[in-house]
Image (cartoon, rainbow, N blue to C red; front, side):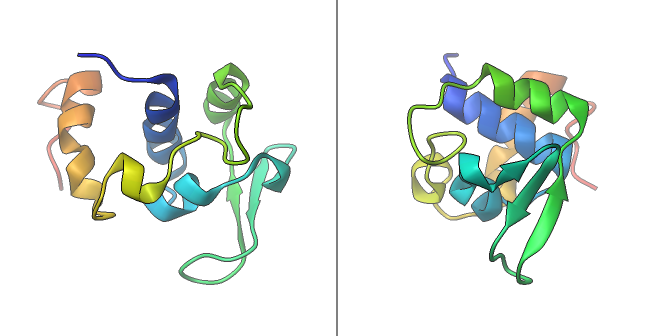
Length: 102
């Protein structure tokens, strides 16, 4: 299975931050200040997303080739916006026992 760096980064940021798919897909490099991703608008309005050290490591590994952090769009990544569409990828990364939805 081949996963491009942008999609892998997208998925890891989702897992590490608990952010919504659309928030991560739309996030831009200039919204990052230190360890905070400052969203100007989201489903619940403007808000900060705190980036743990692991998320910062993921961001450092991504090329800055587009305005968005991962280079992904919501429609290009998962189509419908449903987090459950990420389940096969979670199984791939963590194994079936750890990827069971609660």
